[in-house]
Image (cartoon, rainbow, N blue to C red; front, side):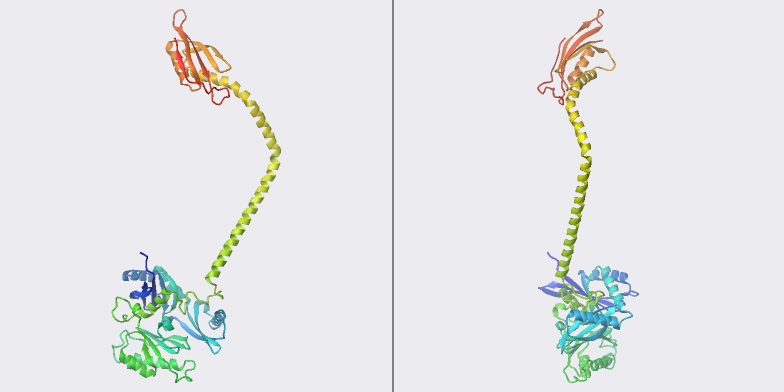
Length: 497
């Protein structure tokens, strides 16, 4: 069974990491495991190795199994600037914004990483939201995720993941408010483009309905901040009677009385974004639990699961140093193949030239050695011509050697006559101190493969006292390496008294 595809969304704040896993289901994606990892005492993102180790144990304990993730930062780490651009392509926008970053952040722009969200062109102009974060923070969070065994696909802003049109904003002109325990973040859309994102200086309690009247506490402060932001929006005074809407992603648990009070204070229609059923964690009944950024983490994971590039990606910034033009994947592959072909052709040309030089050098040396080769060949011819004569003369010596080896070294038997014919038939006679010595020599001759037709011609007593025996034997000597050797000869012997 094939393993289901999985993607993990991590919404990071200064106190916790909210993790939501999206898995493949029914041709799409749905939320699986969801949990909030609250940083233990003394642990912070500034210690990526320790943070990654603790996060790895937490994810394993809660049943997470995704290997890829997308990381979302809270707005407290980010800075956002709205920029108006002349009409043009995305490449010119990247160049203009790169120059703006170098000019506005001349002292520390290399300690920051920037990316931008390009808006629609209206009235001959385009807007772009430039977002930056400390490079050290991005690197630390990436290192912590890798230490936890995760591959980071993107680093974005948690609130911006909720602010896009596919995620529930009702119109092109709206305020998107993200409330969660401990903070409130605001994103503004005008003309269908993101124009602003910031963290509001309001501390949202973990349980907004407890601890007094929220209307006179944090909720009043929130309404004041929202009115101030609306009044400072571009064209805010001229369009004071234009319809606007406040869209709230509520992860703090506002009740109906609080939402009605907030809508009345602002004079804006208010709507709450409901988490789609497929993004609600299955083990939670009703809305996600309070305390974490479950909706933001789920939306980030779902967008990455659908291979949708986030509006801001600080890990793959389009404003990275030295990067001006985006190179397509096909162009990159074509360039890589071309480089490989050029390198292969160069290697083949170099090898051919080296082989040609070596062949030319060998031909020169061969010409220089030609006289010596001719002299050596003449010597070889002479030796070849003389070898048969030399080998035929040595055959008699080889025959005598084989016969000598058959006699014992301690004596007791000796030869008195030896006759070797041209066809290597041998007849020899001798005397021995006893008949057993004669038979021993006969056995050795019969055991020699080079001696054929071994015969004992006679053996008899000799001398007056009969202490000696006279004998005579014959055999044929053969050697397969000699031209006169007889292939038809067979090993045979006979003993006669």
